[in-house]
Length: 127
Image 1 (cartoon, helix red, strand yellow):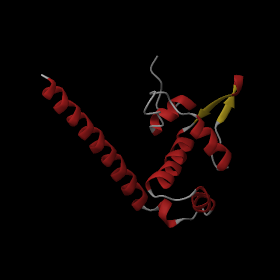
Image 2 (cartoon, rainbow, N blue to C red; image 1 turned 30 degrees about the vertical axis):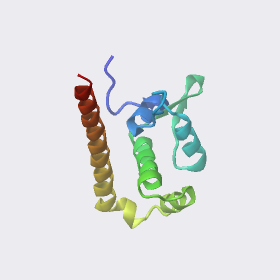
Image 3 (cartoon, rainbow, N blue to C red; image 1 turned 90 degrees about the vertical axis):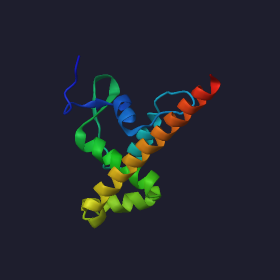
Image 4 (cartoon, rainbow, N blue to C red; image 1 turned 135 degrees about the vertical axis):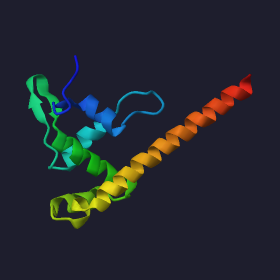
């Protein structure tokens, strides 16, 4: 079944979108999202039958912002809370945020490509 892009996403799907995958085991780390839900009152997933969490596009974008501010910008949880509570933050509303996010995504792609290139070189050396 093909899922509509605007449909709700499960916590596992959101963890994949955010790249929250354990590098050793390859398992999805959903506990990070649950922790952020406790810390940031702005994250409000829909809870349907069976207490399963479902996230809309607004919540996914908020999680992306939180991840970016924590991981790429080096802010603390407290610092991110202040930025999010002050919803008029020029930084979050500016194009600078989008440009930085795109820059980080490009950097991640370059890192992955470099790793793949190195792996290919190692494989060629084995022959």
